[in-house]
Length: 110
Image (cartoon, rainbow, N blue to C red; front, side):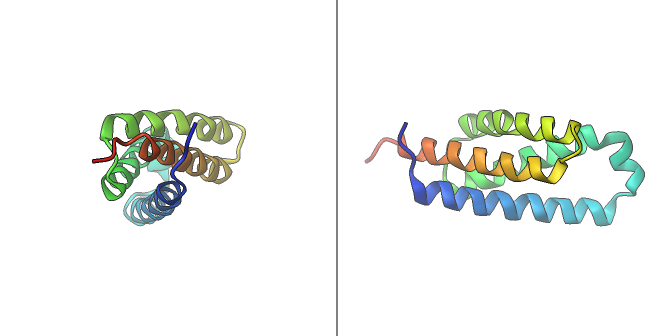
């Protein structure tokens, strides 16, 4: 599988920043109890919002980018279950950026 390295790197950076900003905003605006009760929803929702921002910034089609975000979120979910939430996020960002690099490599050239 071919990967567009530039698109993968840009995707990784945008996803990292978007996830970080969304985590900061939600951490400031929501009480800790919200994450204890609804973290299973808040985290994946923020992840998908960040993936949308990334796809738009890197000019990738949304449906395949969303699929990549869901697939990249699987290792993150596993890491969260075993108590390594932020390690899972890093792994997911790497997986998602590689997916996006693959999408960019398959673009039809005009």
